Image 1 (cartoon, rainbow, N blue to C red):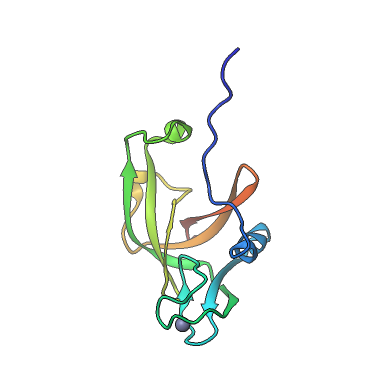
Image 2: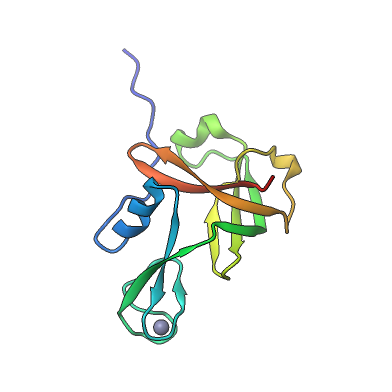
Length: 137
Ligand SMILES: [Zn+2]
């Protein structure tokens, strides 16, 4: 009997990030925003990297941005990604400023361009929603 296919080790909700994933289930993108200085914490952290305060409020962002940079992976580093090769990893600069690592979907890798406008689209990996981006129509 063949081994089961390998599973991608994707981020899972925890006490800190549960609001992010709960919003993702509804197709909304929330970022942890510092109650003291207003900095959006991406990646999410319990302490603000700018002012070291702890209070945080989750604020919805537009889900729109532009491709800041990207690369295309041709090497298999984990067996679960082998069917996806070659796949892209991009950094999307959100309209609100933070830069978010994500895959760009709905486009061939050869057609990706820095600066292209994209919007968030939520996909599932296992039981967790994963934010990815697609070119804006
Ligand atoms: Zn702060």
